[in-house]
Length: 192
Ligand code: ATP
Image (cartoon, rainbow, N blue to C red; front, side):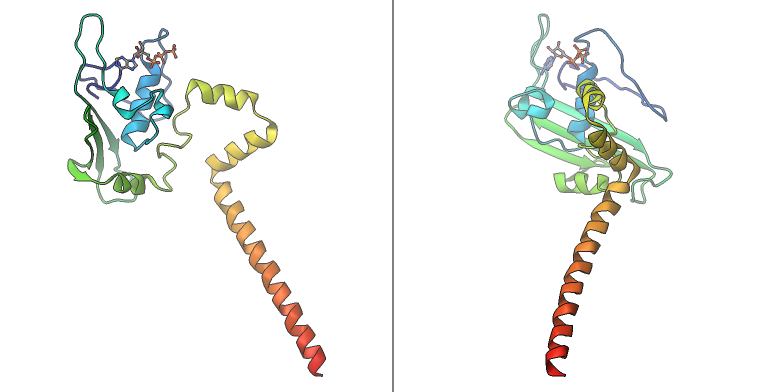
């Protein structure tokens, strides 16, 4: 990333496999790292990034440094296992934003639409709204949540949620069909 929030200089952070925890003093930029990842994956709400307008993510200057005019983040994903359903072994997703509001997205250095980025992560469990990034607030939320809410988080991660939705739809169709069948039986009865 470069010019994103407190990261004025070009900064590269490696995330090895498994789970990564980011620790550091207050105000050192831990949340900004998580926000950079959510931003490059297509976050559209400035509020979710603790700003009021999207250009608030651009480095706004410090005591000894002028503000910058552009923020840019690139997320490089090792896709050799083709976890994300595309033939590429490596995926580079980039987003750039200028102070005048001009913004662009790139997949493997080719300019694309926001939609292409969101489609890429669809059903992968790693999109911008997913639980693959857990912020401080989320941890508290999980601790303080009711067992039923906690269960729904676990079901979501385990992929059970989508089957529950399918089950509800199927049950609704079964009920409708049973109603129709009962109506047909009434008509048959009347005709006998
Ligand atoms: P905490 O542990 O207190 O939650 P943190 O390590 O998560 O802190 P962040 O919230 O990521 O820290 O970073 C906050 C710092 O980022 C603040 O010093 C803030 O001034 C700086 N910052 C945020 N947006 C910008 C910006 N656009 N330009 C420059 N600095 C910024």
